Length: 278
Ligand SMILES: NC(=O)C1=CN([C@@H]2O[C@H](COP(=O)(O)OP(=O)(O)OC[C@H]3O[C@@H](n4cnc5c(N)ncnc54)[C@H](OP(=O)(O)O)[C@@H]3O)[C@@H](O)[C@H]2O)C=CC1
Ligand SMILES: O=C(O)[C@@H]1CCC=N1
Image (tube, rainbow, N blue to C red):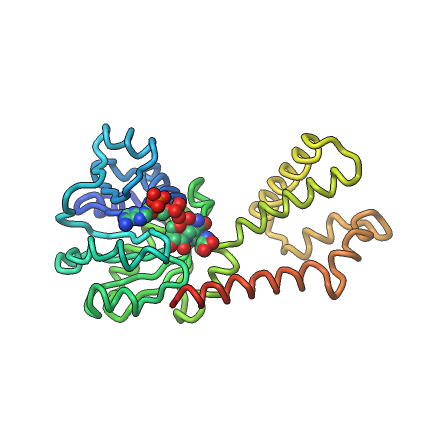
């Protein structure tokens, strides 16, 4: 995992970070950068309806919706793919200042940004996920031909401040990445919902079923994080021969079980990512 150092943050602070669209994902990343030491005055947010916490930060130096952004080391493009064409031109002039553009928009290809900012502009396409809000995200990224190793390290430093970072070999991997780690937290949250629903079907009261489901996912994730054992081994450790888990896994691991369902779900997400490319 890339370690973001105080020097990385200081370098970013010098020319600042601009975030275009500071909703759920842009906001999650900004929170992580501030927690990592980015001073509020080094951040500029462009968003027509900023959340209250951004207004509060503006009182502590964050620049909120200035008339014009004069400079930025990095400009993070974090609006919905559907509004990118309308929103991104307001930061296009930063290409002339040597800013690195970092898009987190699903589907939207690097070529789209090259047509807006010029092929000479350094552009990194990244796919983070919302656990970035608690420093446990994972971001996959890839740069265009104009993105130098220094630009890639800068993007990795930013992403590394909010979790793990992986560099991709090809932009074509991004649809699959989006389907697994970008959208993936929703699958896990849905797993909590599904386990709670199963508990209710077994006559547990609502609140107890939800507490058991949520704490089980939290505990299993923490065990997976701390243990050197593979997921398969951790699963086997729960499964007593002829016991209750084996009975459940016979259903979940059937040919039409969870793997088949997850494969179909991820394929649908990857297909949607390709559609968003326009
Ligand atoms: N949510 C996630 O888990 C992930 C999202 N992404 C990507 O991140 C991007 C943002 O998604 P998400 O944070 O979920 O969406 P949000 O809607 O929460 O955030 C987008 C923000 O952009 C604002 N906005 C709309 N128009 C403009 C504009 N013209 N200029 C500046 N800001 C504008 C929106 O304001 P308003 O609400 O008023 O329209 C909103 O605050 C998407 O491209 C998505 O694909 C990537 C990885 C994970
Ligand atoms: O649902 C979406 O399109 C975005 C991209 C990955 C997660 N959320």
